[in-house]
Length: 513
Figure 1 (tube, one colour):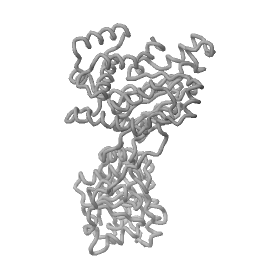
Figure 2: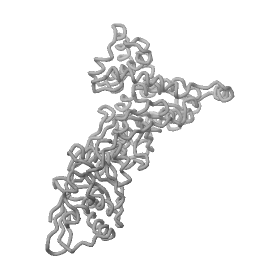
Figure 3: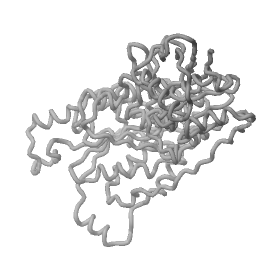
Figure 4: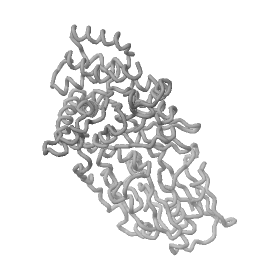
């Protein structure tokens, strides 16, 4: 007999429909799987046969042929154990094929018949809806994740025997009702607070501007000046996620296998801080089976690169295209996948190897060493940093005074309220456009939304000539000025906004000029 069941496999961040077919006939007993299979999938039949035996299904020795269609692309992943087992049972007549019509099935089997969780359930459910399926059967541990989509009835099973029993009932899976979109709450932030930062007003201001307009930020200063401390507190001023953003980010983490089965949603903006020994592939994503890298895991959040010059130069250059396009295309010989990469780049660095330049009384580096250290960062990458803020060593008197007095610095909640107001203004302005925040503007967007008066144009021309700006850095200066105007609730970019935006590029001229 012949039987088939619909399944799916994840490629990149999307799922593809796979039809699992089985034919049982007379002939030399044995089992074969075809359909352009990866090694991981070729092992499926061994797991399925053992799981069937240990689940109490004594099958008559027959010739079994299993095909995963279409055969035009390689099948990867651990999605097919459960659908293969159910298809074989249906081909043996132990299940009626009509019981699986309109059902999409995924799941890995243990040798004892246990149904194990798989990665990438959210894209699979979306694909099932697209293909007109009536319901999805998934491992029990993946049920919560699948239900958050709220678009199809979801059947969770713990064992192969349970799946067969459920499909064999008269009422069957068609009585399972679709659940409403599962509600979720964004947890209140309990991490480090900006009130812990002593002094460093310039850096605090730069951080607020960067988050308000989604601009890239570079922090420069000697060791112990608080660069990493400030960076770790920037998540505390990030606005919360919308439901669409939660599902978008959770889909990426689902494919990467990084979701918690108990709480299968990412409800906080990502803050990724990879070590400087990271490889270009781990940063950008890829591999034999393309998977999201750190820049995609930081989507809608922050990618923090501490000790920026210590990163391999080839890894840093990987960032250039995603910072412009907000996405990255990973190409392989058989197929290519596009991953989102809309992140805020936050970087920190010392001004030299010993960390004390330009304090020549403490700096032990030679001029050549300083030049070599700074120029580990290429000019094209530096051009993509919208803001640069210097952080100096805090005087003991200020630090001790702050510790002894009850007066505290402004806390994160106050800063976040201002950030939310500015971002709301931008979302209203760019509604119906490809942009979300000022940092997203391309050259056409800059021309349209960063309009200058006659005096402001003359000032910008002077800055362009004095600082030898490139077209890219000039546009980025204007985008920062647009954010500063929004923070002042000004419709037009004024001279003071241009001046402050230029001041946050002064470090470029000081160290790399």
